[in-house]
Every structure is written in structure tokens, then in C-alpha cells.
Amino acid sequence: MTMRITQPMAENAERRRENLFVRVVRRLADSRELTLFVLVIALALAMSIVYPNNFPTASNMRAVLLNLAPVGILVCGMMLLMIGGTFDLSVGSTLAFSGVWAAVVAGWWGWPAEVAIVVGILVGALCGLVNGLIVTRIGINALIATLGTLTIYRSLTYVTAGTGVTPITDAFAAYGRAADPLLRIQSPFWAMLVLVLIGGWLVARTRFFRQYYFIGGNPRAAQLSGIRVDRLILIGFVIMGALAGLAGVLGAARLNSAVVNAGVGIELKVITATVLGGASLKGGEGTILGGILGVLFIALIENAMIINAIGVFWQGLVVGLVLLFAVSLDRFKTSGRA
Image 1: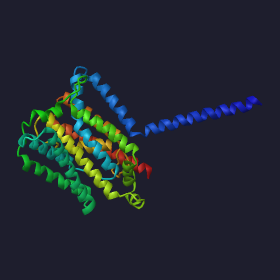
Image 2: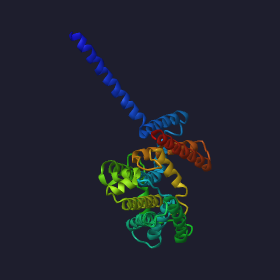
Image 3: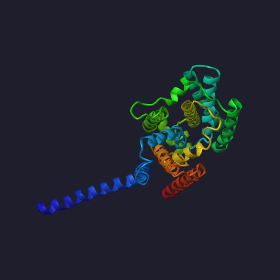
Image 4: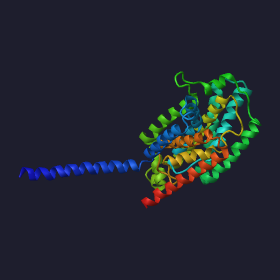
């Protein structure tokens, strides 16, 4: 009798363990972050095997991390906007405009480097504020609004600085060239890492930023529940602009030069990484961690092409194909839920 009771109980316990395992596996399979993480590791290992004398070197690793820093900084803001159901195409122009203004303040006017950095970030925030007001107050679609300001901010960059500001000052350049003593990676990467950690925690854990998921999922329902949708979207655009300003300032400082064509085409990389990292074009989904993994994936692909001396135009082609793949994946996932 005891054996008859014990055997079904053991079978049920084993079945529960199997069901738990299946649920865990399915959940991991649905995780865009896990998929990207595996792809990044696999790509890095493959490149280490194929290019043992070029890819896994300390200098190349530093170059990869440093080059992905501005895109990573912008992805933090773009992910927040796309979670809320909108986006900003003017980030490249905002980056250039902010960097030029910081360079003008430090290099032409002779003001302290710290003041120039603050001015650059504030210029970016102001550009974001203008974008947000156009979208939320005037009611123009974000695509049209930010396409317009993309051209406006780029034109203002040329008007402000002509061909650029070169050199700026050594004190200003020090903020972009400072490196840690151990890994010798310059400050733009560490700024990005801090933003990812803080931004990722804020978006995932705080009530204020969690509201963006509700807005992106159903803006009408969010409005009826008491969430001030327009106000939050406006704040999102300001944050995006400020981060673009920071990226522009750090880029100008690292080069000790503010060029007027800085950030041209960077919006494509930013949106590609954001969608690849789990953001939905319809809003309501995504994490900053996923976005950064998307940035790293694209950076590794570009690095492989650089090692093979493949031209920059072909690199743009590959990024465009990755964007199409990411959007198709998003559409497939969305249609599968319908």
C-alpha cells in the first residue's frame, strides 16, 4: 500500500520538476537579452579563432569599447523613448550641435572646460525640449518632427562653427582622454557604463520610469489611469537630448576637435541596436541592457569588417540589413501574439 502511494507521488514530483525546467527553458528562449548575449559571445569567440592576431588584442578591445560608447550613451535615451512608443531621429545632429557649442565656449570664448561641458549638455537638453514640445504640444508625428529638427540642428551646427573648432583646449580634452590606470580605456566608455547601470536600474525598478511601459503599451489607458502621458514623453525627449549632448561633448573632448559632421548616420545605428535589443516599434517593450547588447553586437560586426579592410559604405549596408532583420523579428513576435 505504501509503495503504491509513494510511486505516484514520486512521478508527480518528477513531472513538476520537468515542467519547471520546460518553463525556464521557454522563458530563456523568449528573452531577447539572452539570445543577444549568446550571439555576442559566439561572435567574439569566432572572431578570436578566425583573427587571432587582430581581434583579441588589448588595443583592439579598447578600440571596440571606445567606439561603441557614443552609440551606447544614445541608446539609453532612445530605449526610454521607444518603450514609451516614440523615437528621435535628430540625435546625430543634436550630438554635433552640442559638441560644437561646448567647443565654442571653451576654445573660442576661453571659458573653463567644466562650464563648456555643462553648456554642451544643456544645448542637447534644449534640442530635446524643442522636439518634445513639437510632438506633445503641436501634435506633429515624431517621425516628421525629428526629421525636420535633424536638418535644422545640423544647419545650425554649420552656422555656429563653419568647418568646426580645432583645437579646443587641453583642459577640455582631458575630460575625453582620461583613462583608468588598469585597462587604459578612456572616459567615454566609463561614462556609458555608468549610464547603463543607473539607467537600467531606474527603468526596471522605479515607479516613475516604469510608467513609460504603460504609455507604450496603451497610451489611452495610461492617460485614463492618471498618468500624464505628454509630460512624460516630453521628459523623455529632454533626457534623450541631454544624453546626445553628453555624447557630443565627450566626443569633441576626446578628439580635442568639434567637427560639424559628427554623428552623421549614427541614428541608424542607435535605432538598430535599440530594436535589436528588444524594443518594439509599437512601444511598451525593451530594456537598456538589451539595447547595450545590441550595440555590442553591431560593434563586433563592424570590427570584423574593419579587420578585413571592408569600406565604410559596406558597413552601412550591413547595419541596414541588421535593422531590417530586427524589425522583421519584432513584427513576427507581435503577429505571433495576435
